[in-house]
Image (tube, rainbow, N blue to C red; front, top):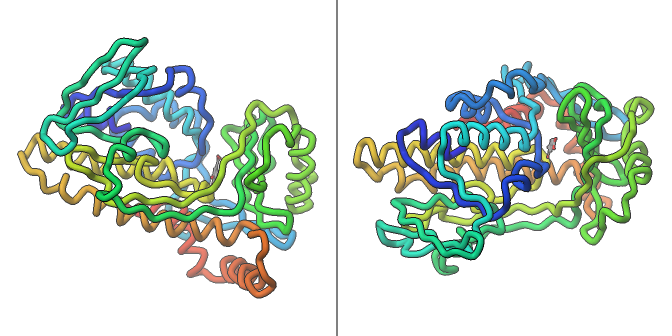
Length: 374
Ligand code: DHB
C-alpha cells in the first residue's frame, strides 16, 4: 500500500521482502476493511476487483446467553464495512506494482539496516547468496512484528507497552456458504466464536482455544461440532460444514512500540503495534499508518519540510492507541478468561447487556468498528 501511495506521490521505493512471492500471495489474514482503507485503495486505483467481489456489510451480530443481537452499523454511524480478504488486497497491490514495473525484491536473506541516524541509511541483504546494498533517503519498516526493523532500534530508544491474553484463536477457512449474511461474534461459556466469511461461498470461522493447543488436535469434525455447541440454536442448525482448506492457531496480543521513528527509520503496521484480532483492526491500522507516512514523505520532498515526518509517530500513535483500546475491549467482553471469578463474570454479563440495550453503547461500538477518522 505504501509503495503505491509513494508512487502516486512521485517518490521511488524498493520493496524488500524475506519470503517468496507465492508465500506472500497465499497467506490468510483478516477480512474486514474500514471505509478509510477502501478509500486509500481507491485513491491509487487498486480497488476495481474489490468493488466487483467484496461484500458490503451494514451490520453485525453479537450473541450471548443463547440470543443474537444485531448491531446496525449503518444506522448508528452512516457507514458500512467491506468484507474482502487481506489476501486479495495483497494480490491486487502486488499485481498493480508489477504492472507499473516497480521494484520488488522477494526472498531477501539476512536483511540488516545501517546508518539509521544519518541522512543516508542503508539496507543490506543477500539474495541467492549474493550480498547487495541499497542506499536510501528513508527506510519504512513495514516488516511485521518479527521483522528486522523494530529489532534494529536500540532498546534504550524505544518503549514497549504490552498485554498477552490467556487464549488463542483457532481459525478455519472452508468452501461452504457462510452461516449468516453478517458476522456473528459469540460469547459462550465454552469460549468465544466468530462466524465470518470471504464470499457467498467461502466461510471463515474462529474458536477461542487454549494457548498450548495445536491444529492437529482439531480434525474438521471436532471443529464443526465445537462451533455448533457455541452458536445459538438457529445458527447452529443452519451451519453448513465441509472440509477445511486452511486451519491455524494464533495467539492474541496487544503491543505498542513508541516512538515509531528512529532517525531515518519509520515503523508502520505490525512492526510497531499488534492488536488482538477481535474487531479486525490490524490491517486497517497499517493502512492509516502508511497514509500518514506517505503524506509526511510527500511533504518532505515537495515542500522541503520535515515537520510532518517529525510528527508522524505522534499522529499515528494517537489513532493506534484508540484502536488498541477498542480491540482490547472487544476481546475482553467477548472471550471467557480462565480463572475468572463470579464477580468478574457478572460484570462481563452486565457489559454485554448494557451494550445491546443502550444506544450510546451501540454507537460507541459501531463508530470504532467502522473505523475512527484519519
Ligand atoms: C475476521 C477476523 C476478525 O478478527 C474479525 O474481527 C472479523 C473478521 C475475518 O478473518 O474474517
